[in-house]
Length: 143
Image 1 (cartoon, rainbow, N blue to C red):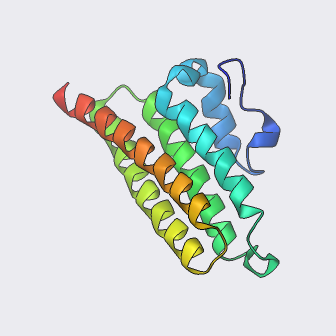
Image 2: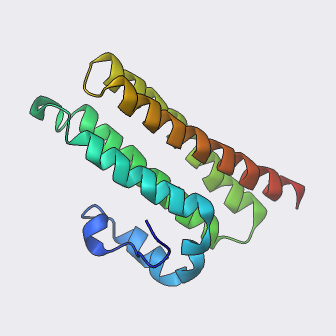
């Protein structure tokens, strides 16, 4: 995904008007590395979800989809707030979401919905996001 790419209405799940509202207010959020990598993780994850059986459409697949979009909301809200306590609240929420997505990825792998290669790539993306998030949290706690 290049820097010129923007999140469009098609990329965002229906019913996520609050994400669109925050995006309009925070046009500079695209400059955050964690935001760009999170969007790439969303695209990769939604591609993986196509491999899941139709019987999981409203089960595990829906849980994964909801968790990734909740994490995006947390990034957008954390970027929006200048108060340290408000920002940290959303960053810790994002940390919980990343751990939840890792658990769902493990379940998906054990149920053989995704391959070992897919699981490894997905976990690597989540690991990198966790490192970026840890740095963001540390910088907020020092300030």
